[in-house]
Structures are given as C-alpha cells and as structure tokens.
Image (cartoon, rainbow over all chains, first blue to last red; front, side, top):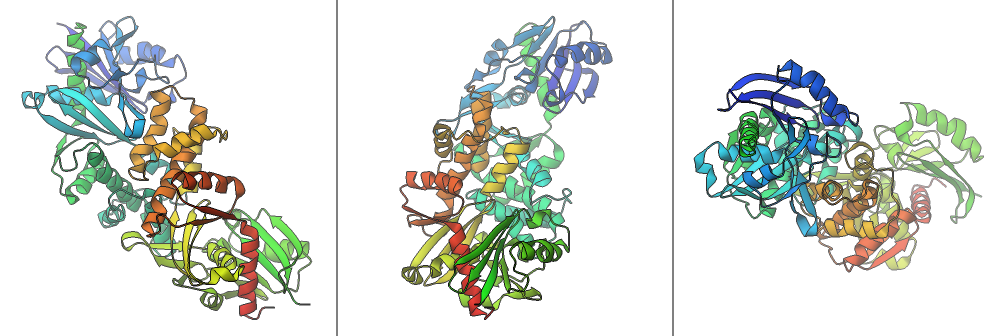
Length: 299
Length: 299
C-alpha cells in the first residue's frame, strides 16, 4: 500500500505524519526542529537521522511545506505567484533530496506596490478547500492567525490574493522587550475587550499603542494587565483593517489554527458583526500535502 | 546674584545647567543617569553626590523636569490635566528634597476614551512658547520626536491637548529583536523614502509592517536595508495619522529635538505638503525651567 511522509515544517516546529493514500494517519510525531533553530545544512541531516527513523518512514516519499522551503530552511524553493491553485503549487514542488520534495510558498501584489509572501499557509488553505466539494466554487476568506497572520482569498478553488499582518510577532517583542512588557496573558477578557475598544478601526496604531502605556502611567492600571490589553489592541487592529483592504469587510471569515488564538480572533470579529466559522488546522494541512503529493505522483 | 540648577532628567540622560536669572548658562554638564538605569532611592543620592558637586551647585535651588517625576524616578509627581499653561504647571511643582523641586507631567483625554500622558515635553513646549511674544497668541502644533513622540497643541499660551506615538520605541525593539532586525540605519534616503511610500496614510500598520519582511523574502532586498525602510515606514505612519487626529492635518509643524531625527521627520512632513519649522530643544527646556522657577519664586 502506498504511503506518504507528510510534514508541516515551520519556523518553530515540525509536525510529521505517515498517511495512507486515503489520508488515514498511520503514525504521527512532532519535533522541536523549527528552522529558526537550525544551522545551515542541519535540516537534511536531522530529517534523515531523526524524523524518518522515529516514524519508521526511511523509504517513504516525503512532502514538506512551510519555512523549510525558505532561505533559512533546507533549500530555497521559489515562490509561486498568485493566483494559484493545487495544480500550480504542485508544479512548483522542488526535489530537495532523494525522495524529499518541498512545496513552494506564494507571492502576490501587496499594498501600494509592495509585495507579500507566505510559506505553508498555501498548503493548509488548498487542503481546506479540497476537503469539501462545496468549497470548490465561490469566494472564501480564510484567516490563519499566528506569528505572521495570513488572510487568504480563494475564488473557485484558486488562491487569488492574500494579505499578511505582523500581529503575533509584534505582540511577542513588545511583551518581552518594551515598556509594555508583562509576564503574560492572564486571560482577562474584560481587559482584552478594553484593548479591542482601544483598537478603534485599526487606524493610527502608533498612537493607539501608546494608550497601553498611558493607562498604566495615567490611570493606575496594573502593569501585568498590559498583555491582555495589548493582545486586544493588536488583534482588534488586525481584524478591523485587513478584510477591508481585501475588499471583503463584511464577508464571513473561515478561521483556522491554534484554538486559544482563534478564540480571541473570533471574539474580535464577532464584535464587529462578522460571521466566523472555525476549523482545525492539522487536518487541512494533511489534506493539502496529500493532494499535492498525488498530483505529482509521489504516491 | 540668584542662580538656578535647571535639569532635564529623562529616561536615558540627565542634562544640567546652572542659569542666572537672565537665562545665561554659567555651567553645563550631562550625566548618563537616566532614571531607567537607577535603583529605587538612587536618584536623590546621586543628585547630591555627583550632579551638584560637578556643577559647584551645592546650595542652589534646583528644578527638575522629565521622567524623574515618574514612578521609576525620584518621587511620583501627580500629572496636571490639560488645558494647562505655565501657571498651572508651576502650581503642580512638588518639592522632593531640600531645595529640589520637580515639575509635573501632563495628562489629557486620548483616543476613544483612553488617556494620554507625558513628562518633560510640557516644560520644553512652555519654554518654546515663552521664548517669543509672537507665540503667546494663536494655535501652534509642536512635535517632539523621540522614544515616544509627542505632538502638543498650544492655544493662546496654553497646552490644550496632545497625542503620543510609540514610534521610536517600536523602531528600537523591532530593529533589535524581530525578524526585521538589522545592524542600524545606513542613512540611505532612497530606502527611507521607500518606507515613507509604504506607510500610505498611516492606516493598516500591521499589514504594512509585514512589507518590511516581504521586500527581503519576496524581492531580494538586502536585510541590512531594513532599518532605513522601517524608519521611513514608522515615521511616515506617525506623521500621516497624528496631526489629522488632532484636527490639524495641514497645520504648520514646529519640530523640536534631536537634529538627525528631526531631519527625517521634516522629510516625511514636507513630502505630505506640510510646512515645517525646526527649533533647538535645549534652549526651550532651559527657558521653560527658568520660567517655572521664577513663577514659584525659587530664584
């Protein structure tokens, strides 16, 4: 029976599954081998020495997506330009080693002549689209929160454009290294909502960011509550600005990813009157990797 | 002859002058004693042991402004609420020790029900207003760039409102701790201008920030050019958003502060068609401290 070693290999983690041709999971392991922690050349060696043996997958064809295809990963896989569907992404697969292929990321035109890029989110989004025939037609707005949030627009099965947001990384560096530092989210939703209010319509963020300092210095708020306030302020600003820039201000949002983070995004979106549908990310990534592998005849 | 020990004591530095009653500088020293580096209680001791002796000012009345009046400074001096003129600020002076007074900061209503605060900029702005009789009437928009940029509106000699921007600190933490890190500004004005363009009208900053990553990953720009791009992007966003929020989108801007930073702000403002007048900051702070001291009869 033909099998695939399917890997979502990002900046901070590697998740690997052995799948059969029907998508059933025969084995699964996660590894703390995010490419940000790897030395040049280390990805190939650790994949052969650790990942394959742990899953008893020495001889299986392997398909990898995510930051492993970037200049800090295994090899740099050229971006595919939008619009792109499964066929175009499959055509962009690059063979990195014997029985190892890596999926390309996507590139599209961004704001005011800038460009935008992503790696890994394309495979999840295409897998999500492929998982239900009803998604093959029409327009879908797919939001994947994270270090760099990605909002993808799919039309008739193709990813036509997308927009990134620096939200997660900005939250992390401000919480760790600025006057807004605090020891972490207390999950105080009242403070999170205060941050959502302070986000306004996502405009004037530099001024609004300073309110996170002024509420402590000028109103005596607890410094430790800054994390929840900042989380609300940044997520609120992202969800207020991004769909509108894509021309989809009132469209339903398909929210995919980490449960705790998606909960906060849902709260922010619902408050703006937006309909939200939540989905698990891992099944979608697996479906995308399997579909790409089949299209290239890897299994 | 009566003299004053006038100090601008901020987060990162202390600048001290001995002034005569006419404002002439009799002595001047700077000290790396920013309050962010001091332990609790250390400010009083180092002021007595180092600052006063270095300026041969053991017995002079001293007036201090800036972060030294905050909860990480010498003592916490309550904010004065806007609108406020020299009289109100002078009335808010607090005696911290024998012959030592500290000026209060200002507080005002901020965006969407938030509050805003500053410390030190009030003294500079009031000194700037007092330095020329023509400034006693009419409306003035005074911009003081820095770690936290401050835009103050003065009307008929009173500071009626102000708005802070997190620009300088955001630039610093992103340049040091994020995927946008680079070894520092190369003073490449073409790249700075590219950042100004990417700032748009100051909206959607979370999305625009990601263009600083995408231009490297997706277009092959040099990572080391990120500092100048980020500088343009953030300053551009600040100058596009802040005057408009104060209802003064097209008003001339009085730019006061560090020469290199003011040069970049001027470039960003002029590009938006705004008239800019630049002024030195130190004479204005000295004038403010002297005026406050006289009003309280300290010399």
